[in-house]
Structure formats: structure tokens, C-alpha cells
Image (spheres, rainbow, N blue to C red):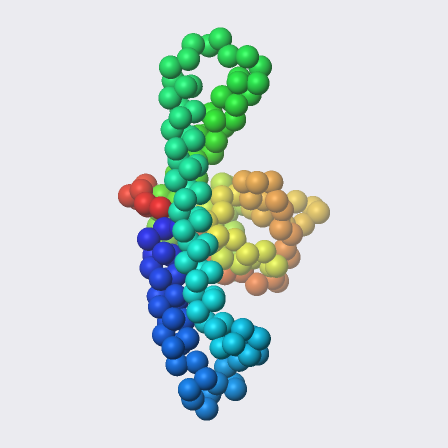
Length: 191
């Protein structure tokens, strides 16, 4: 969880604890979301839910701490050992390398920044065969910062994104797209 999520969870817990102290004291009690469960739990549902959120947050924090410690330990071993790993250890080392590469890709994607360089609102504005980045809708497809190519063939018109997924559309279909370009990498977001 990042700092904003923890702050929101703390606010929810405070509100539930506050509500628990007033639970059953007003006429709105019978319209309350928790009323049915409060009856089952002797009016303690908000307190129990708040305690559960606190407990889950503590478990998550501890789990993240253990995960970080394990990665640090394995990294130390990995960096101090020579290339004489057994097959099992080599597999673990390869998994660590793959995880590091995936994390690097995730960080890069989180930090991408785009600027709008144009719009496509009608069929005649489509740049056929040119790789572009789009956000918006064409036909039944919705795209968000998607790189791809518009293709026009006898079989019809399509947009193929960089994952290889096609969306077919016709000249009369709805088109509302922003054309983007990658402009810079933003500051790293702390989690």
C-alpha cells in the first residue's frame, strides 16, 4: 500500500470507530448499512470492521517487510556467489532476474508522460499504416495510451495495438481519439 492508501484506510477506521460509539443512538440506525449485522454482533459491527482493517493493514505491512528482507538476502547471496549454481539455484536466480526486469518495465510504464499532438474525429483523418499512440474510442474499441497501427485492407479497417489485438471498424463508426507522443519520464513514484 502506498501512503495515500494507508491514509484512506486510517480515515475509514477512525470513521468506523466514531460511528461505533454512536451506533444505535439515533433514528437512522434502522436505515444503516450495518444495522442487520450490528444486531448479529451486539452493535459492534463498525468496531469489528475497524479492527479487521487495522489487522489486515498490519499483516500487509509485515508481509511486505518480510518480502523485502527475503529479496535483500537472496540478492546478497546472488551477488556474492560465483556462477557455480546448481540447477535449482540457477532457476531461482533466473526468476529473480526476470522479476527485476518486470519491475523495471513497470516503473518505466508508471513514469511515462504523454502530450497530445492531435485528434482524430473522422475517418478521413486516420493515418493509415503509421505507428501512433492513441487514447479514446474507435468503433467498439476503447484505448488508453495504446501504441499501434491503423490498417486498411479489402477485408475492412482495423486498429492493431502493440499487443497484437485488433479492433475492426467501419467508415461510419464513431471515432474520438487523441493522438499522443511520449514526452518525458516523470519522477519515480514511491510506494
